[in-house]
Image (cartoon, rainbow, N blue to C red; front, side, top):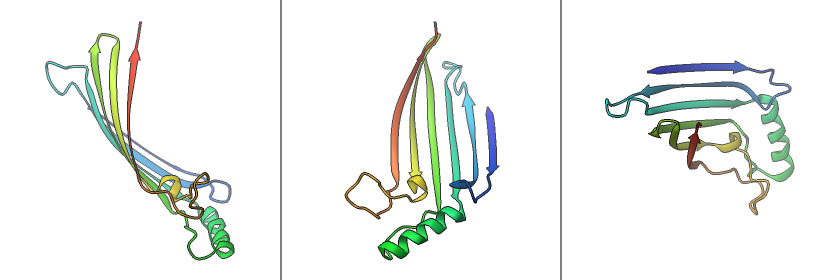
Length: 130
């Protein structure tokens, strides 16, 4: 079993995110038949700085009360690394993202001024070592 945690702070007058924290736990060899398989979960939190929020308020004053104010981004990740054979792994993963971009708007969409919706992301990664 492995555990990690980290936190950071950045001056809010020059950074979009002023503080950030994440942590997680990983289990290795959940069964005797699969001693090198791994499973892990991890949450993360990023806080949008007051200066960036003030910029959003300026946009709101110009465009109307519907403009979103960014606040935070939350993330939950779950991953399972499966060893297919020695040197080859397959790793599916899942992420649930709350307030993508801290509650940012979609710069490419037709709904200017609407915050991005929460997102679920599924992925897979493979590694071959030779």
